[in-house]
Length: 152
Image (cartoon, rainbow, N blue to C red; front, side, top):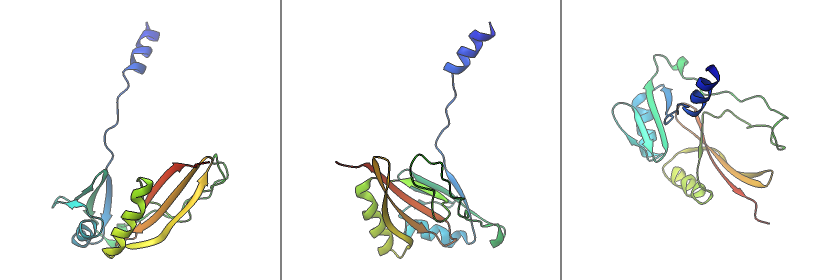
């Protein structure tokens, strides 16, 4: 009987829903303006900042000391390719299409955004990737990443 219940539980697996990142920010108004004016998000008074599939909830930190962008991660030699990990901390990674990445970079630049690492490409197995790092006013790194199969 317990085997039958286990089979039912496996088949009836619950699903996670949409993931939204929450950001503690040092100046809510300034962050709302940045996410609206530079990143092109629809921003409401609740602190929601949304554009396409990118969604944040911006919340006012009690203290500037509470705002903590991610530090760099430890390099790893056990990835399935020669890549050992990012060179600086990632707070958000957003997949974009290969063709959209450069368009988004230009849009952010034109609006005064802080591109901290210009677009660069590298290889993972039979795919190439292109990443760019955008930093918000509190130092959070938003990484836009695109990947495509290498054409031979």
